[in-house]
Structure formats: C-alpha cells, structure tokens
Image 1 (tube, one colour):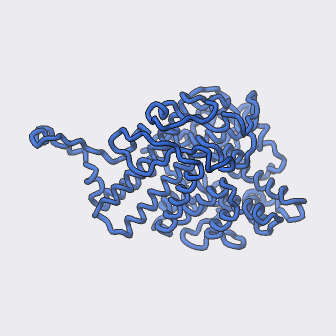
Image 2 (tube, rainbow, N blue to C red; image 1 turned 60 degrees about the horizontal axis):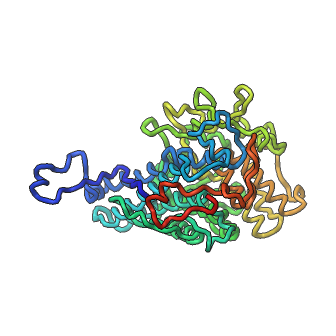
Image 3 (cartoon, one colour; image 1 turned 120 degrees about the vertical axis):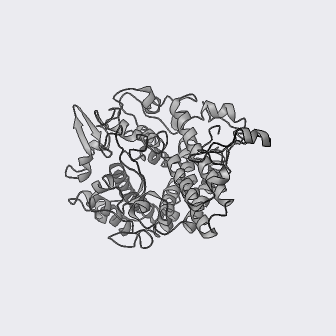
Length: 479
C-alpha cells in the first residue's frame, strides 16, 4: 500500500544535525508522533481520526455501498458516467479502473490509520492500561470493518475454497515513512481469521456503552463488534456462530432488543433511522456527517437533481415490482417518482451543503441475520425465525404477518427472509454481497447481461498501482 494515512497526526521530519535543527525548527503547527499521543486529549483526537479515515468518499461515504448496489441489480444507470461507477455497473472493470484503485487505496489507508493509532497509544504513557484497551478495541474494530469490505470485493467468496483462495495483504503494523510495500496476499481463510480475532478483542475490551446517544450510534461499543461478527459469520455460512453471536444482542422473544450494553432495538418507524438526529437505538453503528465533512457520494449518486446527480434510479424490474412489497409499506415512502424514474431517498439532503448520516449497521439487519441463520441451522420452520421476520416486516407494514403454515418448506422461509433483506436494506450496500455469499449470479439489468460466479468480473481486479508498488502482489485470475 503506497498511500500512508496519517489523519490528524502530522509526523515532523527532523534534521540530522543540531545546527540544522536550530536553523529550521519544527513549525509550531506541526507535532511529532510522540507529541500526538502525549496527552489524553490528543489521543482522543487521534482515535476520532480513525473514524474519519473510514468514512471517505471512496470508502464508507458511499463508494462501497453504491458499488455493491450496482452489482446487486436493484438500480439502473441513468447517466452512464464513467466517474460514477459505469464500469462497475456494466461489469467491465480492469486493473486501471478508477474505482478499483480508489476503494483499495482508501480502504488500506483506513487500515493503516488504525495501526498508527494502535502503535501510538501502545507507546504512550499518557493514559492507563484500561483506557488503552478500550482504544485498542476501537482500532481493531475499524481495521476489521475495512478489511471485511475489501476482502468481499477483491477476493473470492468464503464458500470458494478459502484456504487456497488469495485474499488481501494483512497489514497489521503501521507504515509511516513510505516503502515497506512488499507483502503477499493472505488466504481468504486467514483474512477472515484476523477479522474475527480483531472483533473478538474489540468485544472484550470496548465499553458497553457511552455517555451520549451520539457516541453510542457513532463509536464502536461491545454490541457493535458483536453485530459485525454476525455479518461476518453469515458470509462464511457459519450459521451456528451467527446464532451464538446474535443471541448476545437479541432477546429470546419479541419485542426484540439487546439485553445488555446499549439497548439496541427497532424503532417504531424506520424513517427515524434516516432522519435527524440519526442516533436512535436502531443505529448500532453509523457514520456522522456535518458541514465540516466532505460531501457523501451516496447522496449524490442516489438522489435526483437538484439534491443529487441523478445517476442511479431504482430498477423497476427488481424488488420494486415484487408483489410481496405491499403498497401500504412505509418503506415505499423512501421512493420518489421524478419524471419516469423512481429514486431512493433514504439520504435526501443535498450533500453539497450537508450530508445525512450513513448507517453501517442497523438493528434490523441483525434480526434478519439471526432469522436466516436460525432457519438454515435448524432446518425447520423455526418459530423464532418467523417472529424475527415479522418484527421487521410489521414495523413497516402492519397488514402482513407470517405464520409457519405460510411456508411449505424451510427454503420458502429462507427465501422470504431474503426478500425482506432486499426491501429493508435497499441501497445500504448489501445487494451484491448478499448474492455473492450465496453463490448466486449477479443479475442482469437494463442492457447488462447476467454475470455468473465463474466470470472473472465476479470479483474486482487488484489495482495496477498496487501491482507496481508491491512486488509480492498477484493479480486475480483472468485479469
């Protein structure tokens, strides 16, 4: 990785001689790495800087979510703008494509920032060991989140021979001076092992909750780490572990809520999760944005003019036309018809002035993860799985309630849960990933044909820039 993320940390370069040091003192606006971690206040700022490193325009401010939705088939392309992900939508990426390079660079920059903060805190004497471990938990959560996003795009899914499939480089130490780029790819299996190791550490050491609703929604706590583990295990098809982890944060019976730590639960109205102040108990983890932040690309891409660029309307042949998505469903109020197209307005603000928060983990996802895992692991019409499905559906459509008698087989129950995911999580970055974890083709849309799991475009190529700067890097087959 040739881009080094320093965030708010500025590393000063010292002259080699005392005379030069006197002639060119360190500018007063710069601080050394040691000084950056010299007080509790400065350490706190470095930790917050890690979160800023993840929510960039080319990573979790929209590019990750939008890219996966374009691959999932639920959106059309109205502008055919190359800079807005045309190659991703058309399945015509190559190693020099901009999004391939930008997502990789920002993802590894975020990982590097988490490593920088970890090592800076480790060497500091400004805070005690208890506080250090809490910050270490945040650092390792950020590293796990970024690594998981990258391994989904640039490596084969976990079901495809993970011990032998090349994943991504495991960069576990900070790169502060350039160079040190030579690092081979770990196997997909080893990448997942590291992600889970980071999340297990985070769960053990993160605080159970913070003093404010804002922090509980925007900083990692114990429930956040557990929630992400349910997603990771779901993508591994380890359904028993999904159930084990989800049971820590989902009560046995309705109304479902987390029994300890932050009292995460569904809100009565889904629309409150996407409206100010964005800090409801449904928001297990969200990225906050204000006028001080760069605009989010998710709002630009999905909103029609004038609040966005009108790139990606909803595909009328996708979930939008599914008869199981009732017309009285409150979630349809996110959809706005402009001209002949329907647009998703979960993030309705104009990003040029101020962006909406972007949810990364919502409690409804956890309930659906658990519902699917219960059905698959028990191989029965599991009553709790149906209750979890009902909790998500009835929150937005009181006219629908599922009974075991509605499903002839377990497969029918699982299919209904997957339909619910498409409705509930539309636009939030699950479209492509959900299909890939199940080994499904990426669907045709518009003039773009279906893409099979054996096609080289099923995963992204390694960017050319990484191949040039990392001699140990290998390209994905076919590119």
